[in-house]
Image (tube, rainbow, N blue to C red; front, side, top):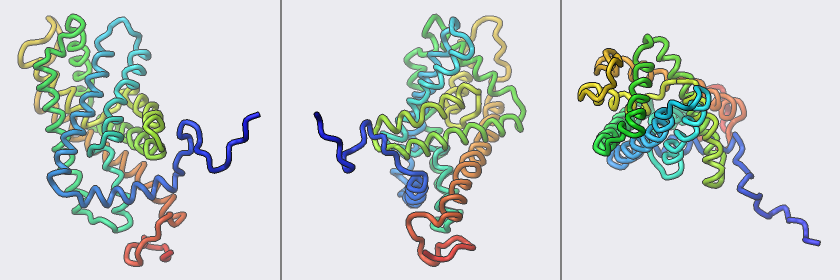
Length: 299
C-alpha cells in the first residue's frame, strides 16, 4: 500500500492558495513597486497591457461574429475567451489601468503619495490607449472585421452602438460594476501559486462582466476605435445606423467608464479589503511607525 503523503508534500495542482490576508500584503507591496517604477518600463508595460486586453477583445469579437449563437451562450462564451487579455497581463506581466486601481491599498497606508497614484494611473492609462490603438491598426491591416463574411465587423459595430448610446450616469455605473469584477479577478489571480490557478481564478469574474455588458475603459479602446474606423471608411452594412459612432461619443464613453472603473476597483475592492485586512486586522507585514494608518497602533 502506498505511504500517506507527508504534511510537507505539495498540494496537487497548486491548490494551496494564498490566504486573503497574504493577498492583501502582496497587493500593498506591489502597489509601492508600481508607483515607484521608472517611466520607460512603466509606459512600455502599459502599452503591452493595452495590446493584451485588446487581444482578449479580438477573441471576444469572433464569438460576437457568430449570429447562430443565442444571447446567453454568446455572452458567456465571449466572456470566457476574453479572459485571455487579463491572463496575459497577470501572468506574462504588464501594467493595466483597471488592475492598478488596487494601488490605493498602499496609498491608504501613506506608503505612496496621491501624486504618485495619479502619475501611475495617467501613464498607464495613456500607455494602455497606445497599445490598444496599435492593435486596432494591426487588426485593420489583417482585415479582421471581414471574418465570417463580415459578421465579425458587424458584431463590433453593434457592440459599439450599445456602448455609445447610454447616458453618462449609466456608463459610469457600468464602469463601477465592471471593475469590481475585474479587480476581484485580479485578487483571485494573486491567490494562485501556478499558472493554472491564476487563470482559473480570473475566468468567472471576467466572464461575468462581459456577459453583463459592463464597461471596461481599456477594452473599449479597442472596440470603439475599430468601429469608428469601419464607419469612416464605409465598411458598414447597408441600412446599419452608425451615426452615434463619433469621436465625441467615444470620449463620452471613455470618461465615465474610466471614472467608474476607478470607483469600482479602488473603492469597492481595494478600500474594502484594506479596511478588513490592514486597518481591521493589522496586516501581515508591520508598517513603520510613520506609516501606521490612523487609529491603529504600530505592530
